[in-house]
Image 1 (cartoon, rainbow, N blue to C red):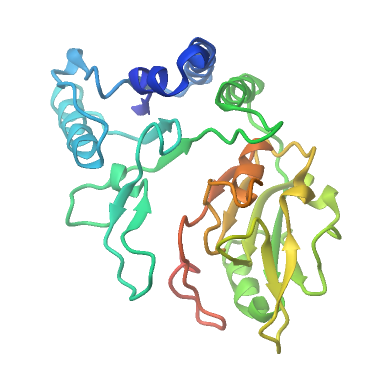
Image 2: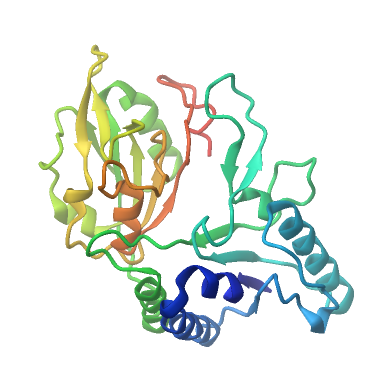
Length: 307
């Protein structure tokens, strides 16, 4: 059974007069999801799941994790089924990120992550079920949460997308490790672009549009909306990919995996949306880090390379 964490009470508090539009779009997305054959139980943590004997709880990571564990036990007891995935609706202002201990001596502090909502138990950092989130990427004229939910409904109704290409975009400094990762993905059609020579504004947008998997091994910098390249023998960073490079693209059905530091950070920088918001607004799914990310500059792969 797939779970959809749909915090209606908190959505109403956060969005006020805009809540009815979001609720209608969410209902549409859930119905399309179920019609597509994805068995889904939608629940509001603050209401609990009375049919399973699950009590209401608060929207704090500890309480939400405990409630999910109770739901898992109830599924096994009543139906002998398992949680197959968890879909969280709303950004961290609606459902907060959980925190994990930071093994590195850096200034990030505890790691913000949704993985805590898929853990088998607090002592094990291996998730038992995958967790995804649909936040609100609204900024300027970008679509808001209701529009993103309607797009999800349309995508479910349209069925599977045709197979596309695999595209890698890497700093020239990390070329070898990036090639190894793409080779390990067994994508025979994978193409790797290196920055430099690639610079922001120069990428062939058709390559992005045609891709179904995009792997980005680029630098992310706090305080910047851009992802950066780096020459093989140079420490200077060069702009490689910007939100403007995605303007007008339809990336529905595309999964972007980013190793950039702050690659999944949603907050705007200097009144401008970052790459994460731009990708989500274009319809892509994004896997990335909210804070610093660590990987190997040369083979063998390690840390975030393996993820």
